[in-house]
Length: 377
Image (cartoon, rainbow, N blue to C red; front, side):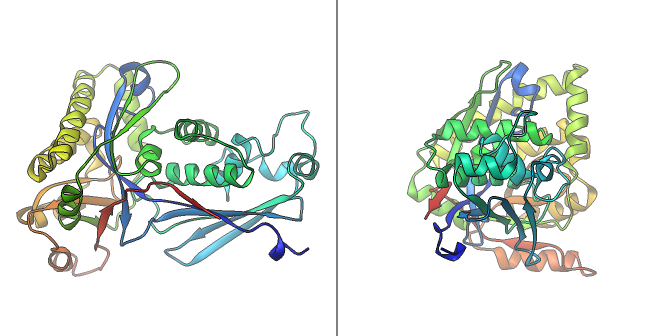
């Protein structure tokens, strides 16, 4: 039997997420000490779920890791034939680090001092090796939770092909564990936003162990249709520096900076108001919450809105009810709620006039994804 005849591919795909209110309250140690509340939404970008992975069993007792970049139409392949090949899993810059960590935290293989060789582990536990491909259609540093959602997608695919039963809670918390192993840190809202469908408000009570409780909001079909025509995503052409922003926010939280402590409380209150706005189908109230969130993000991280992004916002302000940069800020995507439906072309023209020297700014269509993570065989 050749690999082509072996068990077929399991494919996992997920939407991206847009944080609507409450972000930063999900970030350790803030979420552990204060508790967190985030309202966010799963979205398709230009009609597709932009994050995915596929895995199959192979005859060779090895792990074949293929990291794909759909934007540049390129890929890097890494063959792991020994445990030594997996030992740099905790270096996020290493090729395939996320995929290596996924195989470790799903217990497909282990790296303990008493662990058997990789080929022997794969033979004993599974009777095969694995080939996995992972991809994203979003640019690096998009601010839309790509790495955390991709971690969940990859782990779900691995569990599916090894017939491991799991629920959403288990998967969400596994991503937290994976990111701790990978040493990238970060909060819990990204994976909730992309893996769980639709619009949801998620809470996490204070405590040493992070426990998240997502609640999918029963947003009417009429509201979803209205919002879809009045939403747009603008790529700013600027790569964000989330890690630096994160470190500075944590320092200020540890120092007990009064404006930060007060603002975290306001973030969670605004997240609850935002959820109400979506349930009511009130576009202007949604936008008001979004504008408030933008101000709150700038209080948390004053460097999160570079002058370049402020110029974009100023140029489109007459045409939008509200806007906010996705994620921690500093670059990536800008999410907007427009005053008139379907004005994507008009926004693109405004941005082209703004950036006559380059053509980096691009307007994308988005829609609320009501499926979340999907798995197919």
